[in-house]
Amino acid sequence: MAGENENPIDLRTRTKSLAIRIIRVYSALPKTTEAQVLGKQLLRSGTSVGAHYREAMRARSTAEFVSKLQGGLQELEETGYWLELLVDSQTIPEKRLADLLMEIDELTAILVTCVNNAKRRQRNQSKK
Image (tube, rainbow, N blue to C red; front, top):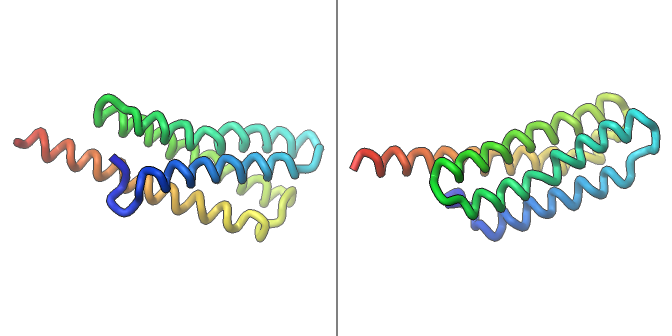
């Protein structure tokens, strides 16, 4: 049920890679209270994207598939927010997170496409 231009194995790998990169960012954060609080939020949201994707791939229905992917989209949005706060608070230089923020944008676009395609297919099937 993955997007038309994306192989499910690629998304599985990319979402896991995102989680690993988030873990590395968290591990490199300063030990200040502020950085650690933001970092723990980042760690939770950034590592759950892949879990949502994997759950979606095991969905028993289109509605469940869409719901799980939408959960992943929410986590991607939250992850981007925490990364922005780390940059805006001058905890991490923006250029250090630029590639990660771009990956979040790309994954968001892919998952939105997957959700839209699934909904379109479901509508088309219900018309038959």
